Length: 379
Image 1 (tube, one colour):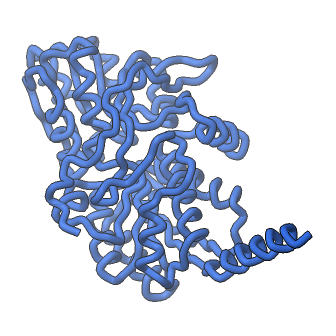
Image 2 (image 1 turned 135 degrees about the vertical axis):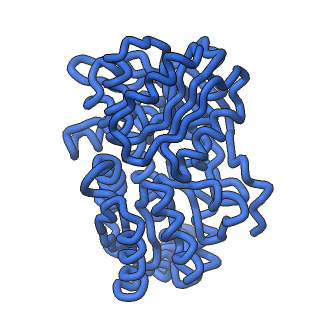
């Protein structure tokens, strides 16, 4: 009986301690919900809010705003959230140029920023900050996977192309870092471009035996359709951003067989991912994308930190985030010294599954890959 009383007292003490840690956390989510690229922000939001709904934690409040993919709007929203809404944590930005406009100012004001997607090199190296955590990747990573795998795909002379903005530059840098063949053409397009006749003519004349593209959202849809119609016929490889779940439906059969570097896939074999894919599909009536998976992981990371520390104690909350004590849909997940993930990178192929297109893993490109700019981060 005494032993039982002791156990009950210990359990009560743990409950009391947990209650003491409970502290309301207000999250400001700024993401793209309209215009070009809206599907990426919608998936980010829906993945994040699915985890919030599952946790049913009354201490977590989320304020969501549409940045319209405009840096000035994102800055205005961040200022409002910090000054008026009094948020503790910011998250949700899809585009790297918007992240560069928002993140440094937010962390300078002592706010935590948890990136669901954009992770430019400038914030991974010299611009790193203890309050900035990238839950997704470092921008170069998925392109590194494509570059490392390209020789396996038979690409020895690559024509590479991306939009002229921070993530585009990171993408081609990442691809070239591990690509062992020859780059016979390197082109930066306008952000938001939809007509690629000129670039396709350059590909045709380049002598390439394969093409690497990073063209997210509607840019990729336009290019792949035009490329298929052109009859050039060289194999395409890219990152998951250009060949993700909602995007490939719009591309149609033009996307079949394309390889893409990724750190997540709906067929990744672990219990957390199986649950995520099932519950997301049931909740929203569609398969999740990489953007949804990052949103889901980000919310679960935040919830894991809330269970361990009060956001009012910045040092303790930061340490709780750093532990990454949650079940990631990617399986293995840890933060490196600069608060970017150390994770496995894969190559997927676009395939047809019944009436829909989806991705399936065809190989592991890199294991335990971290951040190429780690040595430049002084925290």
